[in-house]
Image 1 (cartoon, rainbow, N blue to C red):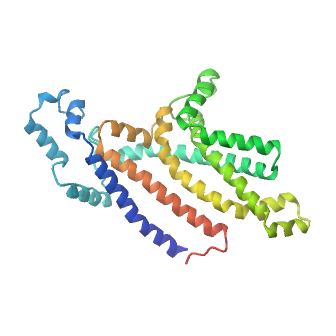
Image 2 (image 1 turned 90 degrees about the horizontal axis):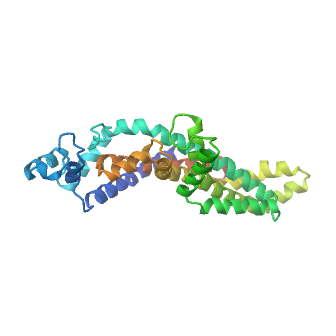
Image 3 (image 1 turned 180 degrees about the horizontal axis):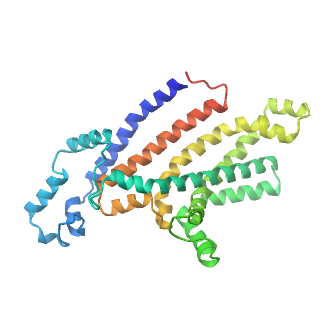
Length: 317
């Protein structure tokens, strides 16, 4: 198992390098001059608010200061080299180091993603098990209708509806902001409902398939209680495909925080990523996208490890 984990981590290196290169090229091939955008938006701290107040020579001097006049391969190589040494650059807009901004906002995104994941797992597995045990009953039908509705509902629409109902109409929970567990409830449910719907549908289908296996029939013929048959014998194997969805959903939630954090006005990586894109703050965009790619890689690794723990037939040497 240890050797397998090491190999997966080594394979993640070219993936992360490729993501970094792709984001770097996309940003630099956009038909926008970031230096002139900085001048126009008065984000350098010294430039005036209108572009015409600076001469072309002064603009080129600013371009040189930011390192944008060098060939692309040198710029990318410099980014990778500095990143390996823990230096992810400085925000062009705020003049703060990118890692300082990440360290300040990442806890909010991680908190939101973990809360959304907990809701997805608990709600999805419970609905899926109930639907499978009560197959072809009204309970099964209602559970799957709710699951389909959860998959179809866009997160931005669902967030606005929850905000309108529980925040503005009923006044039970604060609609925007962060700082307490009450601020976390609505965003977490917004992120978790879609994942719970997928987990519920997959749990139901997987559990029904396992429940028809011969060893389950044998367990029932021995007189075991249905509760023991379901939770002790069937659930272990039924959860293997569910773990795949759960693991990938974690990475998806870290990326999906872009929408939810902006809807609910929460700080986080998604919020600063959107601000950085709007203001052409390339260093911040590169690092936030790289962080999301790392989350996907780690989620895949966690899924593979869980496979080995749940299924004794799987052995990684």
